Length: 159
Image (cartoon, rainbow, N blue to C red; front, side, top):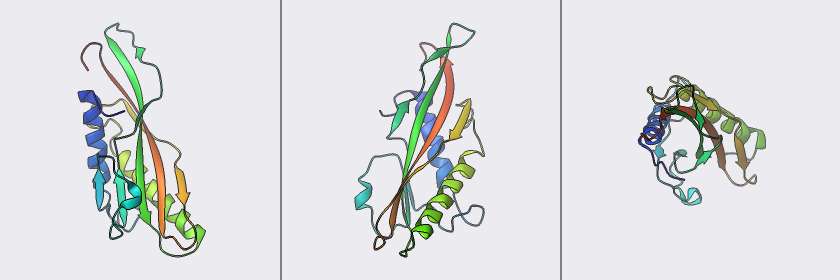
């Protein structure tokens, strides 16, 4: 599902800007995101020179029904925007790789909770539990999916 409504697109662009602001030493991670893109890419072919690569906005899922508020012309919508990341965690230690993933998840949560209204377009933003994928000991690349639940409202008939 791609961003189709102007409100949803504005939220995704705000998420992208918030993720691009991840820098050290404000955050746990010592590496700034070298790329935060909206377009889907094959994450397995990301350049090995990039230490952290984030994709946001190409996986958007419906997580709740559209609810009409007390005003019949207003609706509340819930979407899950999945942030996908590839990061480099050199070494053979499994715990080191999980630590790198947890630091990235902490960075994402810290960056996204600065403004949970996504610039006034959302009612709430929640970072949910991540799904880490750690390769074999001889592979330094890690992959993680970080779901972000966003609730927003709009007038019915005015997407």
